[in-house]
Image (cartoon, rainbow, N blue to C red; front, side, top):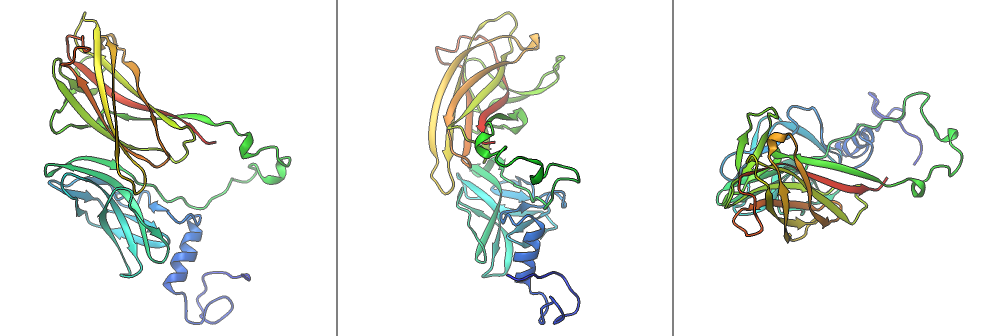
Length: 332
């Protein structure tokens, strides 16, 4: 392609096209050029309320105001919109740009079944929403954000400062990375819910309480990071006991529903019995629940439960769960 330049105000002169600038040129060339040309740009951060998805009551997912960029097509929503979710299911809420209808709209689709075909249909995922018995039980954030084209500042590192082949991808060391989901990112199980509690001791933090002698559970949803290079994702639990002067084991169980893009969710379940000590000592215990085989982009719906009635649960008191911690090796 020969040299060209944009945008000029005199059609037919120089680089300015005679008929003017059409939408296809503006959207699929100029706007993508401004946003790195990475196609799947996502939500425009800081625009109104970032298209945040929350429980809208019943089977409605409420999508807040905001904007996105779908392969150069701009979408804006300046008033909250409810998206209907199927009952007893998990669906993804996406912004769908359709060239056939010449519109971008919020829709619910099957998990991972989004389409990203330029000039036909282009979806930007916002959230995974799970419903049980006519109500929303979990909303997992799936948003990615637009990244504006940039470069190192003046006097930063440039190619001519580095000896040829001194730094290559093969020579870079993969790194261990972590992320976590605190108690506020959990949702109570509909059938056997744990209790959200506010502790009034010096720690002053909210937790989920799991009652002795019964089964209580919560749910959490994550998406496996795109930069993972390890075969497994280590899932660890921060927890403690609630009864003074009592020592024993708490039996924690997990049930993980895992699905890749466009796939059907498969289940993995297991349990650990681990020692619990009173939280007022100021110490949370940390134990590995499972080293879960995963692939980048997988969505994991994780149920964490205390099997308080099981013989292996010997701790005679309530227990709390504070956080799930995820550890993996990243491809540097």
